[in-house]
Length: 265
Length: 277
Image 1 (spheres, each protein chain N blue to C red):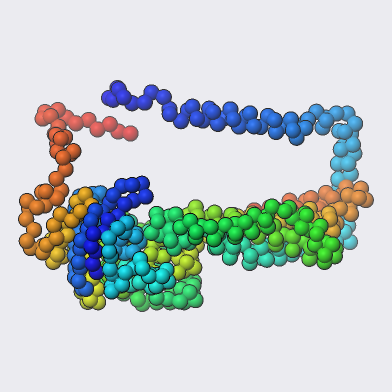
Image 2 (cartoon, one colour; image 1 turned 60 degrees about the vertical axis):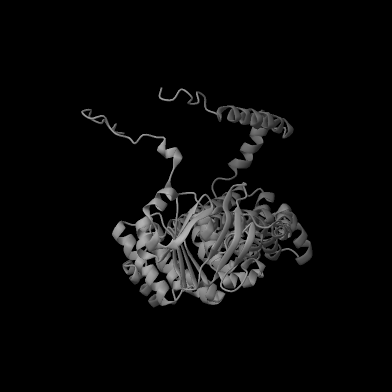
């Protein structure tokens, strides 16, 4: 996949990405880091062909997605799995159906309608959920799960899709540190097993450096650095996350000797 | 006060007051245009006429022969409403799928707004739905009574046409009012429109659709009664006869039957909603 000179401007005129050049080889595992609002999500949605670049050339899995017909682009999209930060699952849908929906792009309409009434690949869904320690929730409704469990259902759906390119937008942001590390390792192991490319945005720099050989830092819609994670210095991270506005505020410290009154409602 | 710049007044107050005044200014001419005068109801001779008409309602007719006739007419009314609804659904669901914006593929990459030309393609379908429902069912019934003769067929066709227009429009809007993100995610992962509908829209829209459909079925029962007056079969036709013969007791029995039918429809709707919402 390659981007050269890619920019993206939102409908309201806000420029989310500026002149991005990026090359990612097949099978690579890359982490995207950077402050909130830097353009990580926009970049991922652009890679998932959910957004069309305003300018620049974009090539993906050997073709130019936006030069394709609608049908061919839908076929291409079925090879791309995007894991959302808050997985968009209908509240009343059961977990098994939500996971099986990952393969809709490969299923015929008849097969998918039949599976809606009676889940046809129970084994496949159980296996994927089992990898994320969630097999017991197979027949639960999505609105009965916690945020972290929903995120794992989202990951299971993308794994079940078995895509060539796996994109993840803050896939573990609602999980506790242990579970987050575990889920990320499952994700990168599965990607490596199926020789899929994995690009994940992460808020936790520690997780990014531990689980991904290559790190791309985004700030203000531009790539600040793009290097092997072993060579990232703490100086570079400070520059990446520097926030002039927040620095102006003094950190909150209660005056010693004075008890803090928290009003009760 | 922590922050002296806090707004003192509710910024929405002015526009709300204005809206209230506009609504009143629009309603008043409406009342005078419709020549509504409640005084005539309690005017001496009018009240007496109604009183005489209503006093014939008691006791409701309950002869065996009449009850048999009533049962037949009720079944016919139910059959007209149900068959009409079934035909309306067969037309409304495809039209709603074509007319709704929520299954647009181009909307995925455009923040939920389909391309202008893709939106233009939806307009003919919306236009068709508008034509179907803008002519009242009683007019269709009069037309079909002339075409296919007196009897339930005219009622079924009239309900099918008008209700297809209403159901199609409302379904399309229900599809658009549910959370669009699941649908967009499915289309964005290579699913087709219909797959995205079945896995993204339907689980969220079932309850609303069911409750509106049952409500429309209830309306179809009432409509089939009204159409009976122009000869389209069912309870309406019986009622027309009874009113003409000043058989108040029979009219009362039929009104009680309506009450029962609507009550049943309501219970059925509650049952479905409890299961699906």
